[in-house]
Length: 483
Image (cartoon, rainbow, N blue to C red; front, side):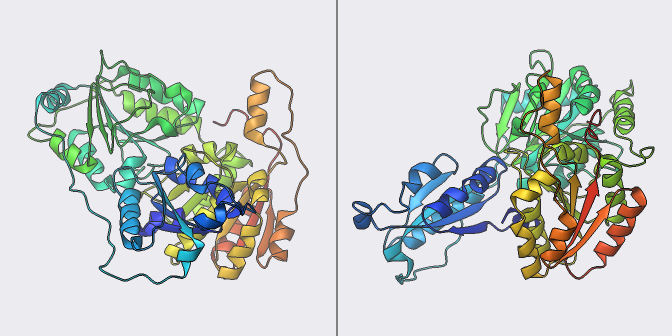
């Protein structure tokens, strides 16, 4: 559902049976809440009369779902349209997210009198109100010598990428993005600093730049995507920090001098109104950071390994190709290496960081944009969790490319255990013959262990009429020092 949403902007519909169906979907719904995905979650439930004495597969769905949704309703006879209208409005307005509707069995097949088309209630796009706060924010921007922009996932959900790019170019302000917001400014642009979020190596280069800044614009930024190293990076008493967000934040990860909740594109327009552009960053620090990041994540001299595999796939994929990536060490490395010229071309779980997401995201993206190339990147443990989705690819006849990094280890957890001086525990497992599994499930399976093999496999996969799984075999410890 999320994969489709990123391509067509329509709220997803998720349907589950009562009891275990609801429980199995909790992870997906929680991810939708944290990653700003509009989702209508329809579940079956027993009628109130039966729930008094019938307990098989029965628990309180609404009580559970209230913790991971914007709202949870039980459908009411005679008010079905009203509930649906409320659910759609809640799911799509402000911070998009999931809304749950429990459907009693007696109502599931009962016709309702149609009164009017059900449409989400639109809310007018609101710019910051004129006043002392906006005046002070404009003055700080006009005087800034070292301004920076940090753009986040709400730029994507509000489709404010064009407004952001225009604002950054007008004032010459360098832009760093979260992983979810990669591509809102083309990463080939000289103002693009690339993505940031979970890489200590990237933070080493980019955080000092934020400490030098005298003006920071947080555009649709929510630190839910970031590692703890981004906590209280700047001091709003010394640096003017202007925040444009969908709704007021309560996270405590950072503070802002001026915070404006509403429409981000309208906020950018209001902030830049009647201000003349002037030269910024005379010390050339952003260019130095850009070069440092390129050196840190250079893969050209690597004969083989995860970075080399990612680079070969990127070279093979068209500019508008879509990549999805599962959680793990490979995701952090890929999110730093992978270049995006458009938004919605790298899809992942950034708030919840859930495993098993890459393949279903890729399925949705390919369904919504069948003409575009789609590649899903998974770790071997993540793919083993959802091997059944390969059968979904087969049955839908979708020529998605699946790249799985095979090192028989939960590499990110192993790195953390080793880094903290603890022995490895519960992170190693047996090697699966993924290529054979793919063939058994109706697709093509290819094993690779070199750049040339990966390049040839990608060419073959992009020309195939069925899904292709490429098992990239890498050594244990291959991620050491890479991110």
